Amino acid sequence: MTRSRGDRAAAVGVGYALAAYGIWGFAPAYWRALGSISTPELLAHRMLWGFGVGLVLLAVTAGFRTFVDALRSTRHVLPIALSALLITANWLTFIWAVNTGRVLDTSLGYYINPLISVVLGAIFLGERFRPLQLTAVGIAALGVLQLTVALGSLPWISLVLAVSFALYGLVRKLAPVAPVTGFALETFLMAPAAAAYLIFLGAENRLAFPVSDAFTNALVAGSGVITAAPLLFFNGATKRLRLSTVGIFQYISPSVAFALAVLAYGEPFTRTHAITFGCVWFALGVYSVDSARALRESGAGASL
Image (cartoon, rainbow, N blue to C red):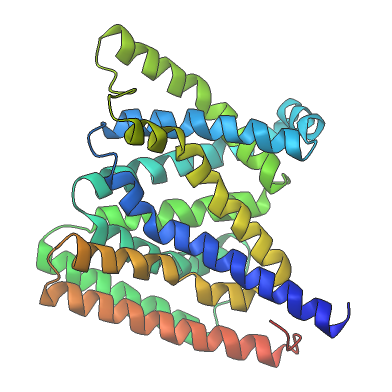
């Protein structure tokens, strides 16, 4: 690849990364606009519309054969069934938190997420802790501990989001399934339960969708796109950029969510929150510096 082609690929990769993490960052505003619909119903719609997008993606990529082959294979289906359960727990917690005024908790969860991934890598993949990595995890843990003591309870929303998404990433990393096929399989496995729940709500005359507001209906229908698009952009970015570069962008989404929570939604940001976020931000700084140094010492290429 010539330098000019490499530069173009890197520029496209940066665009994809900004798109992925930008969409994830503004996701609270999207789901908050649907606050008139209950969280379980929104989750069911997200699953079904996501499956619809998955079918479109399979058609565009001519991936139906791969999808059927994966569906017939226990080796492929079982890990994807697990990842579907994990991402369902993540989506449910996230939508509920957003629509109950807990966006700040979601921000903290996704700041913690990369540090949880480091721990999982050490436990399940045999990756060794570097000293600064261990220091970063410890500093973040201290921040969460002081928040727990100050509030008298675990910040469970943040921890559920961080752990569920980190475990989801681990399972998808180990599962021998391509991204588009995996997304289609996950949503396919979710679809029956989602459809059954919506049918139940309809039978009970408790189904909120569709509503009289066309904009709200469009947002519900668009939930599949808002779910799939950032995942596709993220995969495009990882193919064109070094992982360390992509890693820098991962702090965009919780930072946008943090700004929305404090500046747009007026959620309280107390001294206790400041200490916890300060610990986590410092830990992420240590983690990022250590990761960049390790990559440089490994002799990886200098390009983005």
